[in-house]
Image (tube, rainbow, N blue to C red; front, side):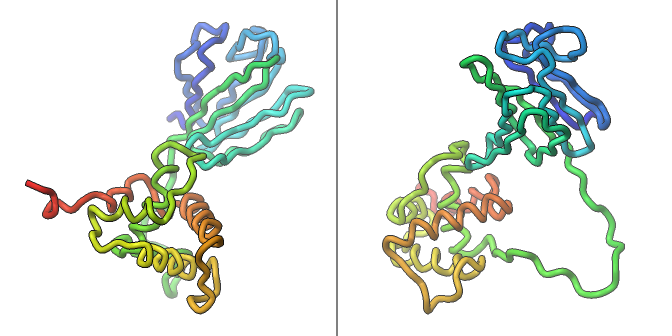
Length: 248
């Protein structure tokens, strides 16, 4: 079964341009400007004859940069600017993103190859070593007010705007008020302070800081939450107005 899907740039010299190329574990896809030796031809004068190679490895993939002078950037379109750089000549660089965009600098143009890794492997069964269950790294209760505050902070970036500025406290209050009529600046700031303690970003409530330091605290919370999937797009449902409060 295939594990990696490659979507070529819209303007390539390959007859499969725009089509999806599926790779099974162990398959390799070479790409470059010229046809001999390349599985995917990108007809652009700024692309090396042998530009690179994508290799599928189960639930992830690796990238080799065969260019002698160009650094390739692999972006996570769903991340907040998250990316990795693959230097010229670098072989077998692992790519950790489920959705990726390889950006090739090409004589003033930026060409993008999309790579998807939809396969997810999980441990099944209940067998394992005896003893107590490992404590979760970050224990959050999705029914609590603090989680709604965290979801509201993360919402712009989860909605497909990875570089969106974080909402202000007043904007969070307005976003929460339909489902939480008693929301106020004080209650939202309290929950932000509580989250910072709960997620171990600060020592304790006695050292809580507000004002000019609050935005840095929000940025740290959102960065941590998105990096470790504490808040996913599905969790934005906590911001919806309960059915029994919808006006009839």
